[in-house]
Image 1 (spheres, rainbow, N blue to C red):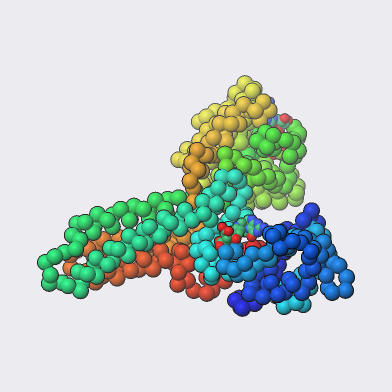
Image 2 (cartoon, rainbow, N blue to C red; image 1 turned 90 degrees about the vertical axis):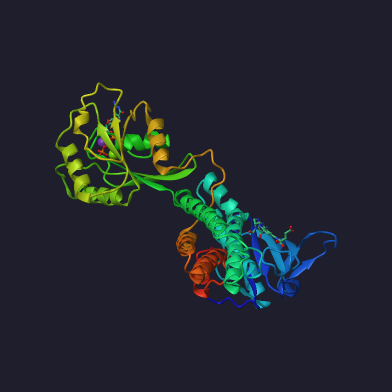
Length: 457
Ligand SMILES: Nc1nc2c(c(=O)[nH]1)N(C=O)[C@@H](CNc1ccc(C(=O)N[C@@H](CCC(=O)O)C(=O)O)cc1)CN2
Ligand SMILES: Nc1nc2c(ncn2[C@@H]2O[C@H](COP(=O)(O)OP(=O)(O)OP(=O)(O)O)[C@@H](O)[C@H]2O)c(=O)[nH]1
Ligand SMILES: [K+]
Ligand SMILES: [Mg+2]
């Protein structure tokens, strides 16, 4: 990756394509000289954003507003200019090319934020949260990302790290003066403090699953025999006619997927082709194959039964499929058509932990809310909480390392025979926490993180 800090970089920061206004950002030490070559203005000096024209020296290219930000108090920490132009891709290209001719180069993905990180404007957790915020799919996941972007996760990490640094200082003092009777902090007090840090790390590890669910969402597959009412259920959940519903068995031949915001959780729901004992043609065989794949990739299965009819060989086929595929995911049995008299035998349901039962009618909408409640319950995310943090898998692994090191510190301290080892392990914990914040992180890890950003961010 071409991350030369000396360069002045430029990129479109708004979405590509036609738009009312598009913003190009220019950042680096030569930003002001470069914009001076191509921007002519008559705005009064007291104006913060200046009105004028982008020109190649011969003709005007666009009428724009330029905003000037002087280092170091800018997003990147460098001199920065924002050009708000008309959102026409042809014009944007012309302006970018003029900037490149005048001494700027195209910004790499995430390079503005990378510079902000290098210049101490944000730590690595905050930089990662910028990306998470842009890709958040629900209000709740956006809030979680914003909490991290605002430094709430970072300050938790810093607090634990500082406390461990403090503890290390006490342990090193003991190492340096082993014969002195004055112990600065008793062994018992050190162990108490360690316990509390271990608990803090454990709490952060526990919020990982929630953050992951908020960011990635949950995949729910609707499966069942033909005519059980799977497509009707999808439509009932979405509140619109997304999938075709008929009384002909085998109506759905391909998967139908939609994402909704369910109490803050991005739920991707997939309706599938009905599974039956005997497939009638190639389309159905391929459709059922896809149903199986969808079921295997899902986080939760909704197993739809037609409770108005007696179980038949197709229900047996599904039970058989579940047994064979050895799926270890939560299943919700939806006993559909509750508006009709029930002929369903509960004893027919397979015996399994991790299984909930809900009576629904896709036709009248009865029980649909209970079904969604069940999904939210399984996800373990409560909407009332507003303080979720965005913890990604990189943080999770480093927090696990921290926890292991702290546990070993505690063992060494308790054993009373190895103060050097206790010190060494505490230092490892400190290193892992620093790495979360981006301190002493290898370049290839930084490259990987920032290369997933969009260009212009
Ligand atoms: N036009 C525009 N809108 C934007 C951004 C941007 O870069 N440009 N942002 C980009 O993500 C977000 C806002 N984030 C920002 C964060 C810090 C600074 C900044 O200039 N910080 C300086 C000065 C702070 C101050 O004046 O108080 C600093 O931290 O020193 C700017 C934007 C969303 N909206
Ligand atoms: N009375 C009643 N009928 C329902 C209910 N849900 C679905 N149906 C009817 O059952 C029939 C089959 O519904 P679909 O939603 O197409 O069933 P499916 O499981 O998607 O069927 P395939 O796509 O063929 O596998 C249709 O005639 C629906 O109107 C319900 O809750 N009550
Ligand atoms: K059908
Ligand atoms: Mg269907």
